[in-house]
Image 1: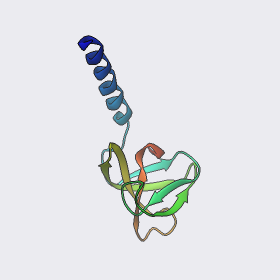
Image 2: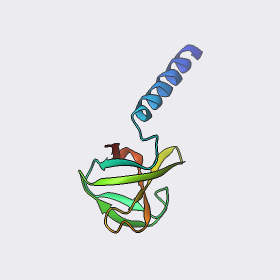
Image 3: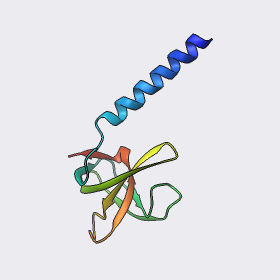
Image 4: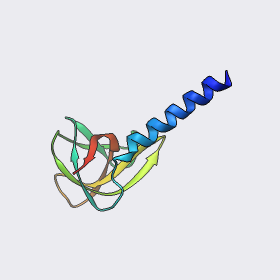
Amino acid sequence: MRKIFAAALLIVLMLCSISEAGGIRRFPSDGICVGDYVRFRSGPGTNYRILGRMFDGERVTVVSQARRGGRLWYEIYDPYSGDRTVWVAAEYILPD
């Protein structure tokens, strides 16, 4: 039983490192939205207010990141106004 648990844990850890291997590591950095109606929020989490939505292919500038509740979030300049920062789940932003 311990061997199965250890093997499962190792697989999970490997998948986590793979999923973040291609992430954004230097700030500011350019990125591109992958998905339609991607919500951006006032803070790094789903409990923050939705301020707007982005669409597939929109370019953004990522200025920082935060991890909340096991999820990685990117702080980006508002893609429409550019005069404030907003937050989006990292899985919707690819490095450009």
